[in-house]
Length: 167
Image 1 (tube, rainbow, N blue to C red):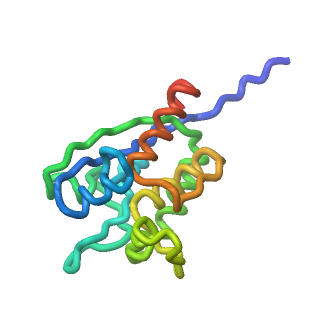
Image 2 (cartoon, one colour; image 1 turned 120 degrees about the horizontal axis):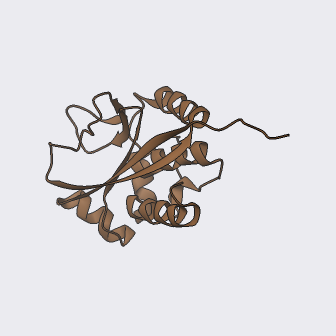
């Protein structure tokens, strides 16, 4: 007997940003890559961890107009990669990300790049960690979120797309 069931897939967009500026250049240099920021878009909401703003937006945010806080505010080159994931996994990921919105930015996590033995004392995240946590839920694979930068996520997504087609 044939199974006529199918999985409803939904698009997920990962946005990679290349920017000029002291912090952006430091991130790109330390990671050995071309990108200094990453965000994830699900159902029109862009989720990202924003740091470096003493006044204004700072921490985990969701922008409902499908625009990152980085778009239009900085000279940024944006590369977008689209992948497809099952509807239920996207819903779980959105629920997780919404539960994190409003949390403070993980400045201490940035110190682990400069001082590798520096111990994190909280669960605050930077942009790449937030996106890797989302990808962990979407894919069901565990990713060590402390070891990734925006550029390494670009590499992981590229490998996954080549391996699975469109992912």
